[in-house]
Image 1 (cartoon, rainbow, N blue to C red):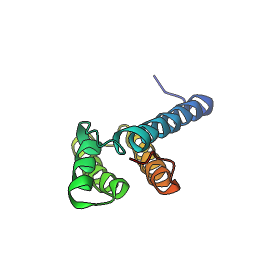
Image 2: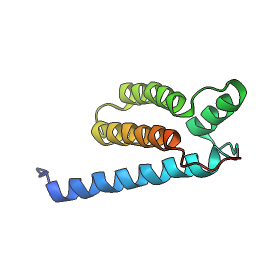
Image 3: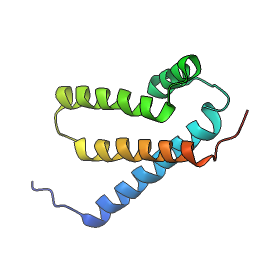
Image 4: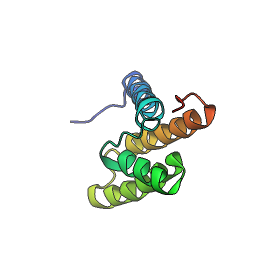
Length: 107
């Protein structure tokens, strides 16, 4: 059975991914980071290290996720690489942009 590429469906998928990454980045910039709330995963690790050493949050998350992305690519193959890659960099671009824009709540 041959799968056909559906441009409309793929466009909707990428729009949804972009909206989801924007909401996640807003949650970190407006809620987690200003109040030093540590979630699990990469964002939690980055917030802890930012508070301890003053390292830049967005860049830390980008570096950690590049490492995890490479590991996942190596272990899982090329299955959903394009969507994961797009989500990954869209999220970090939004996080860095929101952090630099001064939109977050001051303590």
